[in-house]
Length: 276
Image 1 (spheres, helix red, strand yellow):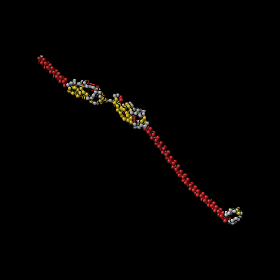
Image 2 (spheres, helix red, strand yellow; image 1 turned 30 degrees about the vertical axis):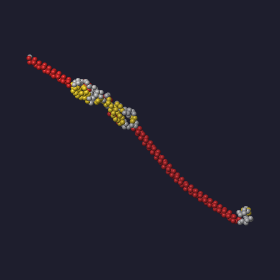
Image 3 (cartoon, helix red, strand yellow; image 1 turned 120 degrees about the horizontal axis):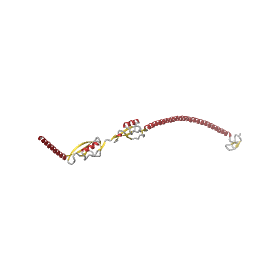
Image 4 (cartoon, one colour; image 1 turned 45 degrees about the vertical axis):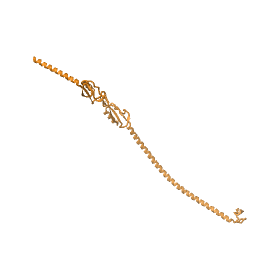
């Protein structure tokens, strides 16, 4: 059935003209053929476009694949670099641990020296012992009245058996003889008694005389260092002794009278001898 496009009348398939309006069907067929041809062309163009787009996508895919290879190469290079860097840090940390352990051991050795006990040794013997232990020392003197402690270490600053570091200074307290004496009181006693007391205390002295009329003759009236003070036994004390002028004059008179009596007796003896 052919439908007339002009009046919409149905006609037979082999009709060339419309039975109603006389429309020529060959033009319609040509138009249909042209349309079909156009459709075919469009289909062909679509197929060509599809093939072109497929080819383009393939090219794009191939181009896209190329960067992936580059990225994989870059990743391999970066992984190798990170491995090398990691290995370097591992070796560095191992080296630092070794150095730290060596330094720690050396520090332990230096700070783990046992202090020897040198109490009771002479100062010379104690210094030799401390030198052997890589320790330093210094001497501190303390006076003692015990002669057995003179020149002997009686105390040390660090206890024997304790731990210390290398070249630590150990203070050694060494006894020295106490050469100090206490000054006695010799005032108002005779010179003889005063010198006897000073000699007994190993005190050196010097005597000075002072003329007076109030004090007893040959009596100590002054001393240069007060009684009770401690001085070295090499220090000299001055004692002042009274020389009573009045007593000396009386003694001189007595001596003169005695001498005259002796002279008179000698002269009388001479007369008796002459008479005989």
